[in-house]
Amino acid sequence: MSTRELSHLLSEVRPKRTKWANDRRVGQVELYDALELVLQELKAVGEAAVPFLQQVKRKDAPDYYKVIKHPMDLAAMAKNLRSEVYNSKRQFADHLQLIRDNCYTYNTDPGNYY
Image 1 (cartoon, rainbow, N blue to C red):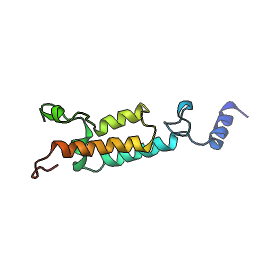
Image 2 (image 1 turned 45 degrees about the vertical axis):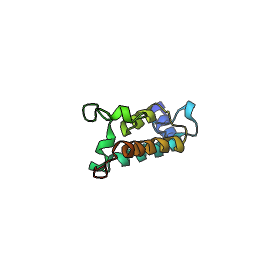
Image 3 (image 1 turned 30 degrees about the vertical axis):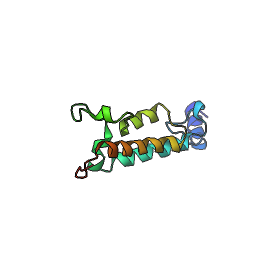
Image 4 (image 1 turned 135 degrees about the vertical axis):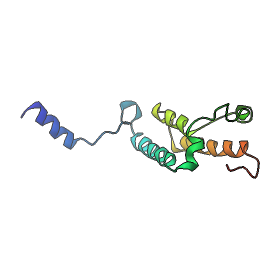
C-alpha cells in the first residue's frame, strides 16, 4: 500500500477537523463552529445588518465615542472569534447584547430608524 493510499484511508477513518480544531482548544470546536454560523447568519440578514457590520466611523457620528464607552460590531466579533477570545456562549451573547444596547443608547430619538 502506498503512502498516498494510506493517507486516504486514514482521512476516511479520522473525523473531519474544522478550522477551529487545535490542541489548545480541546472541546471548543463545536462552540466555535456554532458561533461562526451565528455570525454568518447575522451578517446575511440584509440591509438591517449593515449598520452593525463595521465599527461606527467618527465622520458618520462625531459624538458616538463620547456616548458609547464600549463599542462593539460584528466585524470586531469576527476578529474575536478568529483570535479565539470567546470561551463560552455567554461571552459571545454578551457582545451581541452590547451591540443592541449601544444602538438603543445612542439612538434615543423616538423617530430614529434604529
